[in-house]
Image (cartoon, rainbow, N blue to C red; front, side):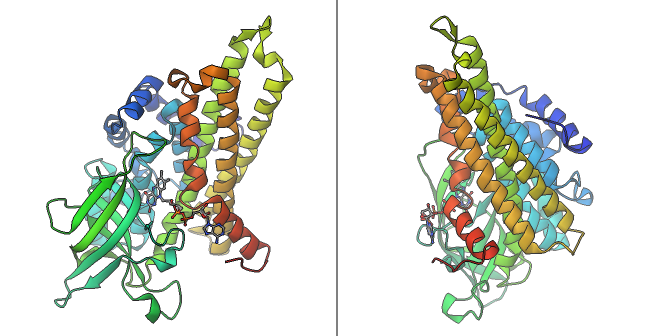
Length: 401
Ligand SMILES: Cc1cc2nc3c(=O)[nH]c(=O)nc-3n(C[C@H](O)[C@H](O)[C@H](O)COP(=O)(O)OP(=O)(O)OC[C@H]3O[C@@H](n4cnc5c(N)ncnc54)[C@H](O)[C@@H]3O)c2cc1C
């Protein structure tokens, strides 16, 4: 990857994270993937050096850096060979804490953030539901205030919740006003920062068997009158969608960085193999049929890199510069996630094909990268929904759904 143009902070982050990821070679990630084993040592190593608080305020124990630096951190992690598994083991702690840090009360922040930063608690992000899919504004999980007013009962089902098995906290988006009663579609959902107490009645979870990133768990989570204290509400009741959007734009930047890292890792393995492997008396990389697709993959990654760090910079600048419309940040973050995910897919697929039969062997890692590179294409928002968003909100085309 071309490093010219990055800030000193970003390069410092890259060096420091590389010094940690160096201790977790590809064999570690192969073993975690094959045995579906949580990479808890990796999470602990990043927490030990304070990296989980990279984009959290210094007064809460964070580093006070921005999403631009956090994106570089995530890219460095996936690029090291840790892949999406390494990123997913920690990323919710970085992005899901963004809306909490902005809208949480002093008590909520003091209770939660330091423990997330030092690794005592891990957090997960509970938005997706099986019956509403990408239609977030129709979420069905309810949080109903009890008669006493000091607690809510949560009932409903979430799906695909990464790290729910190992998390102590969940940033939960739940309905506090029935959808038929809301005046605006963006109204009626609330954000909570809840404890996941497996000994309490009303909480159950089941792991989903999946294609890639097998080291990190993904889950169906069932709530059945699960009781949560009223003071777990973050920000205003019914304003949760607006609040959680802050985390979502940050999440898109981080995912874009993660996709880039995965793509560059795959490309590096491919070029190494293309130089080393000799068939018909010449390195396979001497054939343009091998070299050109890799050169094309590189340029696609570089272009997506520019879009990604532009989006992250806009996100960070918009926090203090009110002249940057929220809409512009959304367009940039969504576009970056889309472009980086597609560029990563191109690089990963070509890396497998460059390896011929060995692309299919676990020891060469590129099959793992290919399995994992579907995640940024699907989540946290699909390619199609980003295309819908740009068609409608940027190009002013009629809404298609
Ligand atoms: C590995 C992994 C980890 C995840 N981790 C989390 C997590 O931690 N927390 C969390 O909350 N969620 C998580 N998710 C969920 C993820 O965000 C969703 O899977 C994603 O948003 C897609 O939603 P869906 O699966 O319900 O797709 P659906 O909404 O069912 O859509 C299915 C397909 O139809 C397309 N489609 C739907 N409507 C339209 C339309 N109007 N126009 C064009 N195409 C359309 C979609 O683009 C998609 O291709 C994770 C998912 C995966 C795979």
